[in-house]
Length: 241
Image (tube, rainbow, N blue to C red; front, side):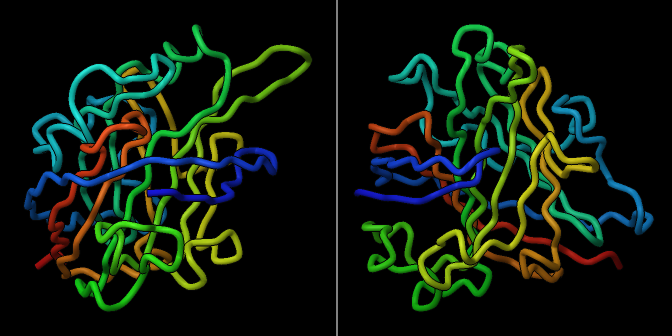
């Protein structure tokens, strides 16, 4: 399954990727909406697992398990979700961490894509004609592409993380950006730390309106040559009673 897209990773860089995702792991989970002030976040975005203690992972393994074929790749372990009135929060536990990887491989890369089928219909949303030549990709309306970048200041480099979200119209192309967030922005809604990354996705921007249940998929870039790189599940967001 061949695929091309142009993400915004601190600069305009053309990347051509080819990978295959044929086997999915199904799971179900219910997220209860937590009340939170309009100006605050439910979680401190710092890439630490502390805030997620006691919360059940949505995927016990993101994508395929085991060592990655490419040593510079990031293996997604557990993936967590939780929502409040404004955001869908995502925590991905990694091996290695962004910092650990960067000490060995001082370059950017890809973590994975999240796909949301917000109307739960494979007849609407993305299709194979849009560059996703697998039935796995049919029907998703929203894609969130998560990547690693490199920040260079006076010859000193450091890793950054960012995400770009797209609507399916036109084939998840850059012209259909919904939101762009990166760690170099003030008040960014994504961060990395010793345990992984944390993201806050704006519910309104993602067109998610609790209560609702929708199909979600993770395509893990670490298993780029593996048939088991995708995980699928039904995610339920519940409004506060």
